[in-house]
Amino acid sequence: MTQTSDNVTWLSQEAYNQLKAELEYLSGPARTEIASKIAAAREEGDLRENGGYHAAKEEQGKQELRVRQLTQLLEHAKVGEAPAEDGVVAPGMVVTIAFDGDPDDTLTFLLASREYASDDIETYSPQSPLGTGVNGKKIGADAQYELPNGKLASVKILEAKAYQG
Image 1 (cartoon, helix red, strand yellow):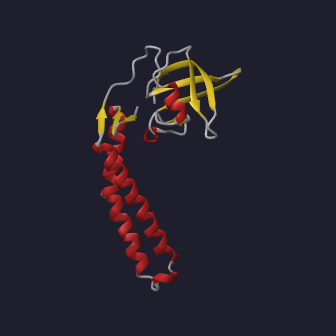
Image 2 (cartoon, helix red, strand yellow):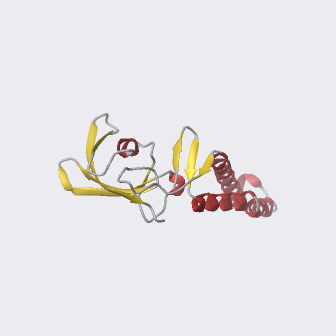
Image 3 (cartoon, helix red, strand yellow):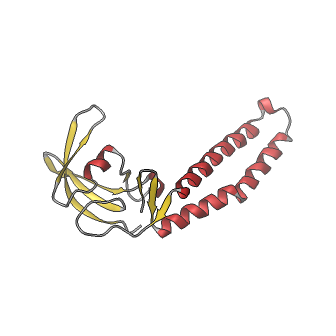
């Protein structure tokens, strides 16, 4: 589970290990692989019209960007515990809310950094408008957050439990 606050990112040991392994792969074997692809494409001839070369260079750029992101994230990471299940919304929790005026219109999401996002559940950052609005609130409480158009939206917190991954 992750929380970013004041450039400190809190990670579970599992999340830290996963990101560290990704960084080690990208800065080691993956760099060697992309360098080989670029070299092979370069040998094909004219670089101006060499689609394979340009694709490999673009892939290399994306890979290096991810290496920089992971390096920065892990430099500021602190490994911590899962949030306490005390009825208070915190990063690393799966939160269910109901939108104001319609108790049947609910949304369940993981309150965590995008680095911990998965395909299994929608993820909202603690710094997002919704994340900021619900973070620290108790189950049963009302919370407000600002919509992109500047208006305020209200939600009721129905449930908050630690994410089990």
